[in-house]
Image (cartoon, rainbow over all chains, first blue to last red; front, side, top):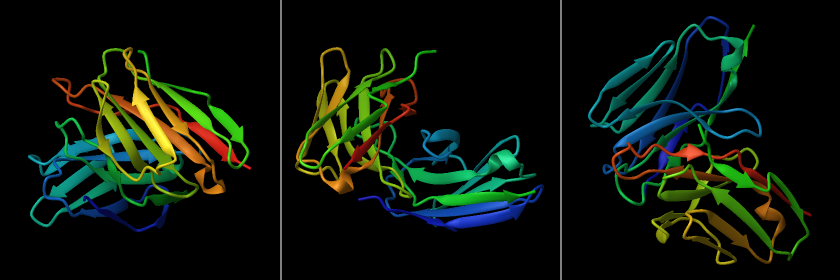
Length: 114
Length: 114
């Protein structure tokens, strides 16, 4: 089955700097890669996603890249702000089937230093 | 807009008791997913239903069972509860056909087993 690995497990950056989180996946059938932000005790919130037919996607301060050949994908947050502090999960899914479960990475705890 | 509803939001049980968690998907959504998130862990896929039939099964213990009813709500039944079952349980719903299949997460049920 699918396995998603995520690094680093913790990340501390100065406010205003950039943060990068990297993930790899194992199942070449995965075609959808969402990123979730989760605050303590809350539900995972989708912040951006990318499909396998796209190499890069950007939404304001957040961007994702996908290297389908290498099975790598990354999240980039620029101009970090204190409210960006949270746990971030990458994930992979085989979207469009009736069993498109989401396989999550192990999470990155991002802390923004003021 | 209507969101996924989960009840109860908090549940405290003793070891060896049973628990039932309920999930009401977004109207018109045909697929429900259940995830279990232990403390400091990533969400783990348990089981999913598409059009009231089980569509996929993950790391769900034999002590757990689930079903989706004719009104599309779903229930997760947990028996012989163990301390290790203490976790956040998320339900997510999606519309598989035509709408892009994004999963929308409910607020979760926090189960504590004493």
